[in-house]
Image 1 (cartoon, rainbow, N blue to C red):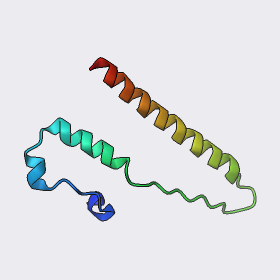
Image 2: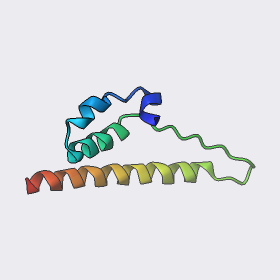
Image 3: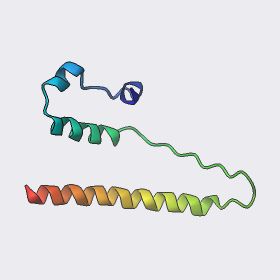
Image 4: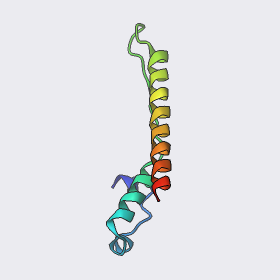
Amino acid sequence: MIMKRRGLNFISESVADTMDEESIITIENEVDNIAPKIVGILGLNSTCDIATLRAELVEHCKEYAANILKKKDQEEEKE
C-alpha cells in the first residue's frame, strides 16, 4: 500500500507470482531505498539543541549507508 502511494509499485501481482521469493525480497529492499526520506526537526523551546541532533542524525545515516555498501561488497565477493 505504501509503495502504491509513493508510485513505486512497479511489480504487479501477476509478475510477482512468476518470481521466486528471494528475487521479490531483493526488489522490495531496493525499492525501499528509492523513495526519499524527509525528516523535519522542530525545536519546541529555546533549550533544544537542534544542531547537535541534526549532526547525530546525519552521522547515523552515513554509517547506515556505509554498512549497506559494505554488506553488498561482501556479498559480491562471496559470489
